[in-house]
Length: 506
Ligand code: GLN
Image 1 (cartoon, rainbow, N blue to C red):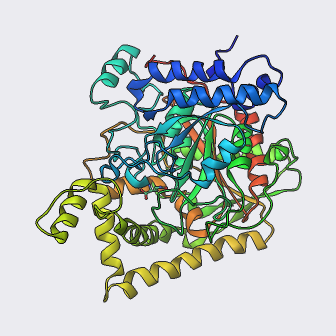
Image 2 (image 1 turned 180 degrees about the vertical axis):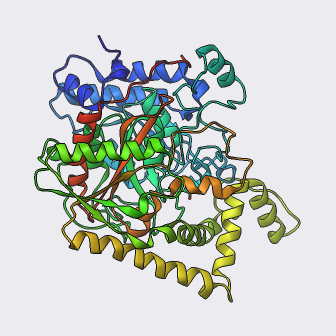
């Protein structure tokens, strides 16, 4: 029999409903797995007692016939989400000791539907990063074994500084690693420039960033408010569909959250692609793209064609400006959002002779180097004299990027297929000492989607030459997550689910 924590979320749901298993035993199986996997550093706060209490309540509701759609399903929560009375720091020292007295809307929706919280998951500090190496709690190790490594070697590195183990991607690295290593059935994540899709691609999991406005941002620690969006990471397309249905929905507390009904996304699975048009943007064939990424993309195109879709070549001419424009808009918003961490209202405070020195010392100690870099860039591009040259231009480029997509959709394209990342996962420490731009390049295929506010999904498409997961990305029309789920399901069925070869950490 499959271990309880290795069931998919949908399988666990069905077994709970059939009363073959209890929420309490399912939760205990996850708590045990989490304890054995501390070397991954995926959870930075475990809440086992709370989880057992929630699971018992789920069992009671199941017994009374009052089960919600996620009843008794144990999930992990990215440390970005405010969770009432529980550790919430966006993995930053500046929020040291912060425990909110409120719950984010997205997590409240999950608990309303019966889900169980296992704990809080590691992430890049304030979601700034692509490898989960900027967290104040240290890096997360991917459960995937580095090519050529023995399990013993990985165990030794896991017990030490983790150098050479693979990154799980970022910023939602804890979420992706925990899902891939069976330390939860699914996890919440967030995506400002690729932080759901890139870690999903690196770990062989599925992740969707829904349309901007689909999920409430209320109670999510803000990074770049016009780009941030909540979404799930899970092991299958179906599991993501189930989670997103619960996470999404109108919330009057977020003025950018859209008041429209949330579809039953699971129903989109199995829908035919006959006659649907899948766009292939030529600008995503970037310079120096590796042969294996190109081959993965071609394979994805074949899957779509074999399922009856019509493949059309499209052009998104402003793609090359997306990354530079993103690295103006996102830091600008971040510098403004992070102004609230002043040592007065939340978390850390370093004493100073006067209030200015207190601010300075608190912010100097509380923010890590990547966050400081973003605040400096953001303040610079918003300053008088530079605002027009940088910020205003970046916003204009953003409009042009959105128009590129609109043109493709007006021409009848239903979804766009691209690779999710330019490479497979790299090693911890491999890209941190170099130029930060090298890390930023990871998001070359994902940031355009945030700039345009569109839904994007990453699904495993196969393995690299070295046996590591590679992801395909599907981009959809605004609020048409359903087409993405239908097409991703076809890819999942055609490519097969990727399987972790070994659990070196346990
Ligand atoms: N890697 C990108 C950044 O560091 C995106 C992060 C995200 O989506 N939160 O800004």
